[in-house]
Length: 425
Image 1 (cartoon, one colour):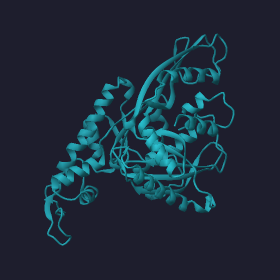
Image 2 (cartoon, rainbow, N blue to C red):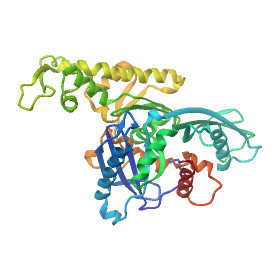
Image 3 (cartoon, rainbow, N blue to C red):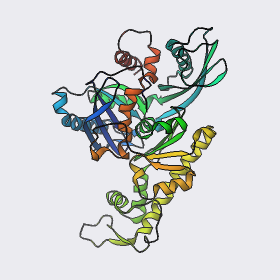
Image 4 (tube, one colour):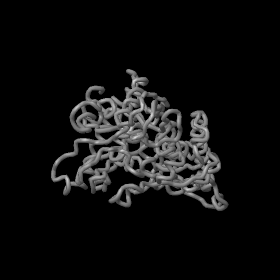
């Protein structure tokens, strides 16, 4: 996808992406390989998450420890490049359960002169004033379409002439309490937040091709505790939401249904799980360790179809909830016929077929495609959000409210962003 941000990163610039999820925390350290903001990954780290449940921090100390370990692992991998300098600034994800979409239209008079970048920012700033609140913080301000003197379908108004300009704007806000808790964990890890990005938006930036973003596509990111989804059309994000159900809920269902431990249930899900039963599953037996007994105890022998029979209803529930939320969004035809599944939970056999059946859409699986240097171990769907955070900051920095609100202030973009975050948090 083409970069839409006017800001360029000098060759050699180092940035880090930090994805704090319910099942894992991941960090990518990237370096700009050219002046256009193309990044290669130099260091990666990931660790099983602690102190986080369904996208919400439940234990600050445990979450802080996990973030420290993850960042330290990425720094060690990139040590030759960083030359002993510790990581300071990170781009961080915002879980979809703490985000809300807002659609607004802003109109300004341009009185016949050529439309400038400042005119566009005036319209965006005008819209931002409508969502100011003490309960949530503005995360994204995304222009989704323009009209000049009533004429529709304008993608780029700058340089055009008219009397009035209307801008359709998608804004995303985050819950203040969740943001403050996240900021506390990261600051206690001696890191500064450079930018925030909603998880599903980052995942979409990582896995979608340009035609999907233009023609209309929904990304569904199935994580450990949250399933996030985002709708793209006309080259922009136009809606995002989430349901607080993910892979960990499937694991819990298996543990209860087969009377085994959560650890063994997770192993069974990975090795033998599936979203739809096949003809041979009734005859294939799997060993289920008995809960509370030692490793030498005789396991239960159950057909694989029993395991899939536990998994399938939960996966159907996830897709039913997503379908209902999308139906209630009022987007209608803007949703398109295309769905891309990503996230760690998307890799389960049969999931694509079940999604096609429930959602009645064209389905494909997505993994990060816009970063170079990704090791094979972190190039799959589970790391889509982490990869997309680097894509966001390199190509979409002009959607950051801090930049729009502080446009008249002196200093670099990053100085303004840091000032804004400091003033608001």
